Length: 344
Image (cartoon, rainbow, N blue to C red; front, side, top):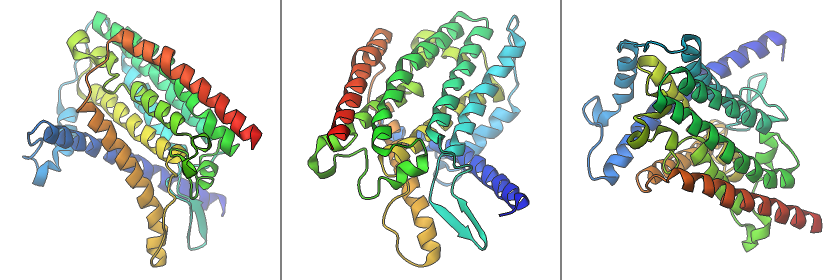
């Protein structure tokens, strides 16, 4: 492949990934509103389009045309920079996630991801950990006590659960010996790390999968771990002083992070795009993407289900659960996995 063709293919993949991710973010919001509404015996959005399917578009237009207010006495450069950091890191992390195997279009052979790097997992962890700076700067620069407390809570929460989340991935790395997400998927053919293969608990990573899910909820500030946005305590948390598109950018970042977490869970623990492939060549090339999207959808549905089911933790419970339960459990999982691999 020539350099010019490579650049064109890369630009096309970037545009497609951003378009699909932003569309997914919009319709995950609609899915959440509809699912939670049915759980609470009400309809949810129904007025804008059939079954309310144009509601995300109406919400986007509302944010665009809504008056953009900037409170007095804010630190304006950081106040403006914070939502940019949040949404940029959320969108960047999707670049190294593979949604399917390599495909061939004529003489062009390319992976179904923006870039296939051999340290893809480290790239995602590094980029997503920077995202908390947007939240912390938003709280600090807003010149509001409620925003400040929300930003501090988000920072403390990220530190507490980032450790457990990172440690939960080490068991997978011990089994695969690679940081490449494509390699990790390829080594799950027939056996997924998120389940117990052959009824032997020591050959799977089901404990690590549980830790990952719990830490991911806290990382994305979702119920029951949405303390940085606790409206009963902090009005709206770190984005209290934001309006219009700046508020929408925080909203987009949160849901984009949810999609990224679901994609990473699919790749690391649920086999990624692996699944039965059959039919004509076109169907065979699309089925891996379908299996990947199906797993992401199931994970997102569980996200929403938990929101409609569980109450919010107290802050002391949140910190104790991370440091006193998840962290020791993650360390124990690493030790057991290492011993099993050494014995084998």
